[in-house]
Structures are given as C-alpha cells and as structure tokens.
Image (cartoon, rainbow, N blue to C red; front, side):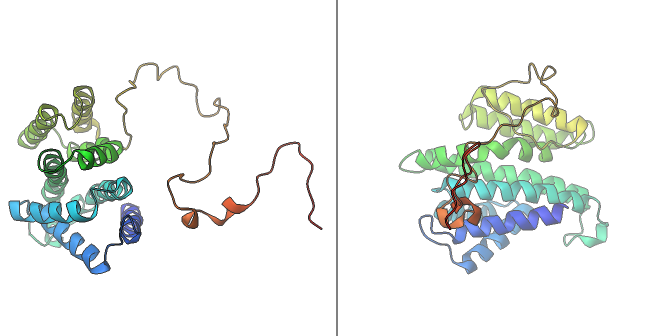
Length: 256
C-alpha cells in the first residue's frame, strides 16, 4: 500500500512540475532532483542538502501548488520507509540496519525543510517565498514530524533530542508560531509512544470537545459548494464538470 501511495504522490509531483507554473520543468531535471534527494536522505552532508535546496529554490518554492505536491510526496516517501524497517539487513545498499536507515532518512527530510525555511526567510529579497513554503508545507508537518518521532524515547534518546533541537530552532526563528510548534512537540511526544499519525492540526483549533462530536452516522450529508479543486485549471478538471447542474424539484428541459 505504501509503495502504491508513493507512486501516486511521485506522479502528482511530476505532473505539478511539468505544468507551466510559471514554466514547465524539463523531465531530466525532475530525474536529477530525485537522485539528489535520495543522496541527501541517505547521506545528509552539506553538499547534498545544498544541491537539493538549490533545485527547490529554482523550480518549486515560488509556487504554492508545487510546494504542496512536493510536501505530499515527502509524506508518502516518509511513510514508505516503514517497508525498509521490515526488510532484511542485507537488502539495504549501505549495509546499515533498515530501521536505523529509515529513522535517519525521516530526520533528514526535516533537516532539508529547515534549510529551505532558513534560506527563503533570510537570504532572499522578499519573504514571499518563505510565506509560500511555510504555508503550503504546514498541512503536512504533523505527518512528517510524526513519522520522524515514531521511535521509542527510551531507546532513541539522541534522535529525539535532535528533533527537540530542530523544533527549538523553528520557534526561535519563527518559521512557525509558538502555539503551532508546541502542538508539534505534543505530536512528537505522542508518536514516540503510539506511532505515527496522519492527521494535520490547525493553530486556531484544539482537541477540546472532540468527545461530544457526533458520529459519522449522525452527521448529515452536506453538498459541497464546489466539485473539484478550485485552483486547478479548467482543462485538468473532470469532464463531468461541464454537465449543467440538476436543480432539485425543477422541470427537466428536453432539447429534442
């Protein structure tokens, strides 16, 4: 299942890059990025992280749509590392234990995000790119952090200290607000004992009152205001969108 979701997310990411937003990314550049990302996650050296960051700054950070599909791909990629954790030690290229390799890769994803946050906030002419990156990544931060923190705190104290240090940096430099960072800390703490979660959180909402929430059977169905993604170009929407809406209790108008 994880490999299937990863394939879909990777295809969506490639489609977002091929779409002119504002210009299409050549296919060989997309292939080069995946190779660079694999190197950065396997070996988090300064050169490998810089190579990924430079590519993202050139092709991704100016578009909220591209940042969104990239974040979704990273979440699917982090989820797919569960398969590595269950693999035999001899099946990994580096010879390291699969669980340790997956743990490092999940942490390295967050290190890459941190580098992108820092550059877009402090080393660009305006903060527009930082706002785009941080805002478009936020819906996926809980999932990404949860996967990275889904290791027992007693057995992996150094790993969790690194996550704590990273969240301290995010709060200090105001990549995200203090309220949101504190919620991310709670996610990391809970994931260490109960495993990863796949649910985002909102700064403006809390978990209070969830017990009184009606069950799915009691919630009435509400017709959505729109069908499909409003930000998607019309030529990428389902063909059914061009069919005239059926108005309840109206007389059918025959065209013959």
